[in-house]
Length: 106
Image (cartoon, rainbow, N blue to C red; front, side):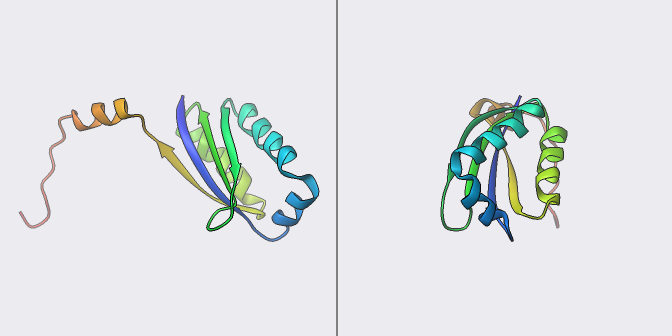
């Protein structure tokens, strides 16, 4: 499974909906969304500042994670940034791949 961080902000009536539902209900809605897509919620925190929520979760693949993010955004009440996360071992594997690249102008 791939790990993701979703940093999201409420827009329009989204924040009003949060005041009606409350935080714990919203977390359960997000958990259900992720689990129904085959993933697993690790944690969800609310914040203030640039983003209203941070959601850390696992998803089977990039396509499923993208489909979920699109479904959330199409409603217009939540805007988010989906960030794929890599483990140190995945970075080790990436830096050890033999990639040939020529810098521009060289």
